[in-house]
Structure formats: structure tokens, C-alpha cells
Image: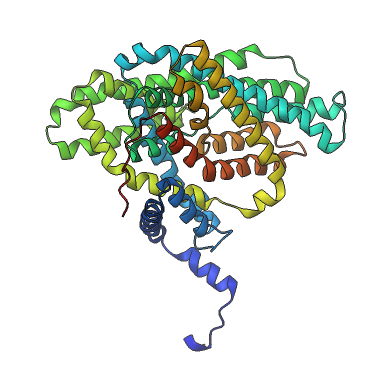
Length: 431
């Protein structure tokens, strides 16, 4: 058969597309995310939004340039790498001198906004499920299906995505008490979410399986995960400090830092701990116990434009229109419960800690981004909830809420930074 007599079908095209080497897609991801960022800058919207829109256009639900296996498997290490570098940078923002001055605000707000999102989202979902499915609150289905689902989703709602926040903070050169408190809360929020999630899984397992409440699962497992994560990050940080004198060239430091970031993440994943917490601890150690640490973080910041672009474009490529069609109502409900809990909780924490007025007014809006950790936890929760009849609806609802958040919240983060008076006007420079 000659080349010209071949019939092109959708199957042929799809097969040919899947045979393209992943490096081609990686190159496209870098180039097109940069283009999306430039268009966003020209339109005076956050660059993160441009990255996301580009990814959505590339997704199987839109133009179909990126196929599903590529997004979920072949390019998945990009997400792990990006989140690890982002966690390292956030840990570097937590200097002891600043924590002594603002630590009370950070601790109170972290606790109240996380628990607030958990409680409000759980309550909203628990009230809503029986109304939609027409079963009473005293029915067996409520206590064995709906209540466990509500508790687990509520715990997942406590998570805040650090990537979007850090990207916009760096994009607009934001500095000041509001920004410091925001980054501090985001850094500690991951640890709180792990504790709440472990509690929720214990409660859900008890209700579904009618088992006695296991306190050891609630207290011991989360504590061990936190300690192992912090120990890995602290050990890697001490190792970096010891190696610094043997790496005099600035250019070589980037390789050393990135190697240790990957090492911390790999060890944490191997031990089923949190790579985010491990790298936050690594960044914290560097920021407080290594000389000339600002120069070290400046080296890493040189990579962040490319890392943010790839990360958010790939996040956008997970976009699935069917998710919003099949569970759009649940996505809106989750977003509403989480929004209310974060806003009320952050305001309460700011009042209890006597935080500045800008924190009381605006911090809750800046804590709304959600992405990587949320998606990871909902997939993990399927081990407990997978046999319930709501499993698909849960998964699609949470993913739908993530999509909605990713599109809306970058504008809210930018708004809060400008209202707090800590974003530098004129950044980013319009191309």
C-alpha cells in the first residue's frame, strides 16, 4: 500500500500521536506555557491563568494534543519535581526572626482556617446528601455512606495549594507581614491537613465497617508521618550545610540543591511520608542555618518560571469536561463549603491573634487555591470509600472543584496582595 493510498482514521491518528516521544510533549509544554504566560501578562491577568488555559486547550477534552496516558503517567514526574521545588521555596520563607514576630498569627490562623474548612464542608455535605438522594438522616445509608463521604471530603477541603500562591507572590514581588503570614500558613497547612485526613479516614472506616474507634490510627500514624518527613528534610538540610564548603562555584550549587531536593522527595515517598513537608523542612534549615541563604534561593528562583509553567499547564491538561457535567453540582457544593470554612476560620484566627487588619480582611481569599495535594488525597481515599455507590461522584466532584478553583483563585490571590499593599505595581512587565 502506498503512502498516498492510506486512509487516515481517528484510531490511526491517535496511535501515531501516542508513539511520539514524551520529550516532544515536554518541549511543547515548556514553549506553549511560556506563550500562555506572555499572553496573560499582556492581558494583565496572572501568568498562572495563562498556563492553566494553555493546558486545558492541550487536554484530551479540548484539542486532544496531549493524550491521557501521557498526562497521568509519562509526564507525572513533572508534578512531583515542581511541588518539591515549590515546597523548598516556601520553607525558605520561614525565617526564625520573622516567625518570632508573626508566629502567633500563623499558628492561630493555620489551625482555625483548616479546621473551619473541614467542619463547614463536612456539615454542608452531610446536610445535602440526604436531600438529593431522598433518604433520612437516621437511615443506614446516611451513617454507612453519606456521613463517611462528607467527613473525608471535608478533611480534603482543608488543603491549600502552595504552587499558585507562591507563583503569584513571586510574579508581583510581594513582601510584607501579610505575605509572610500567608506563606507561613500555607507551609503549616499541609501538616494540619495530614492530621485531619488521618482522623477522617479513621472515622470513615469506623462508620463504614462498624468497627470500634481506633485511637492509635488517629494519633500514632499522623505523628509518625510528620516526624519522618521533618527528619528527612532536617537531615538533608544538615547535609547541605556540610557540603557547602566543598562547592565554591555558584553554578555548581544549583545541581547540589536540586539533587538534595530530589533525594528528600524520593526518601519521603519511599517511606510513605510527605515529600512536601520534607522539602519545606529542608528549605527552613537552609534559610535559618546556612550562610548567604538569600543567594541560594535566588539560584533556585531562576528555574521557577519554567517549573511553574510546566506544572500549571500540566494541571490544566487534566481538565475533563465530563467531570463538570457529571458532578458539577457536587463541585459547586464542595467549593462553597470550603470557601465559607476558609473565610470564617481565617478571620477568626486573625481576630484571636490580633493580626493586622489586612490579614483579617483578605487572608481568607488568598487561601482558596487547591490542586495537587487535594487530588492526591482524594485518589488515596478511594481505598476506604471505593466500594460505596458514591465513589465516582466523589472523585468527579472533587476534581471538578479543583478545576473551578484553579481558574478563579489566581485572581483572588493577586487581589489580596494588592489590597494588602504588598504587591509591587508594574510587575509583571507587560510584554
